[in-house]
Image (tube, rainbow, N blue to C red; front, side):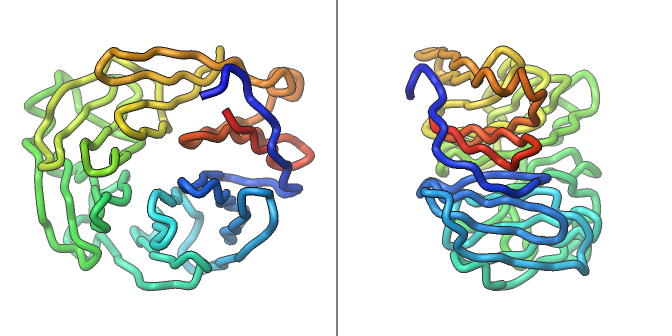
Length: 248
């Protein structure tokens, strides 16, 4: 990783959510639309859906099968690389009405956190349970309330509770360890490297304790009181002019 952020391009569009895939394509949500831009900032495709409420989360870790989460209707929509719909799953109708956080698994299935049972579950795209963790209410002193789940390429699963830290599970949904990193609502992970934002910069932490690095934020972030987001190798800065995309 670089020691500073380098401006790559700006997309003249307001956004409620921004992420990227490993090919450096950028995905931007505004209103009821999801837009895809290539690594140079060129518009590629658009998906529009005004029947499922607001888009809560987009997981582009698999650029050939993008997951879009509509929390209001408990519905996952799967899109191909051209943002054409491949299918849908209503997790409540599949038997999991207490799901608030979920993510794409490396094998194409889904990781979901069931707040009723306080378990991490792996379910198929048809809603069938494949794996389950032990109840987390037995592991933590207070109710575990995750806001983000990320699959580390099939090697581990990271779940963040802003109050209690980051729980790491093995590929079979068994709790491995808890990192005392609190206050995170969103983060990314790749090859054991945790990437997240704090007010003082972009933090990169190796869960095995081999690396710890901080990259300063662009000066404009403080000047314009910008809304920030981060993916595995990019920083997103939402200003009045649109979304500025930085590499780091």
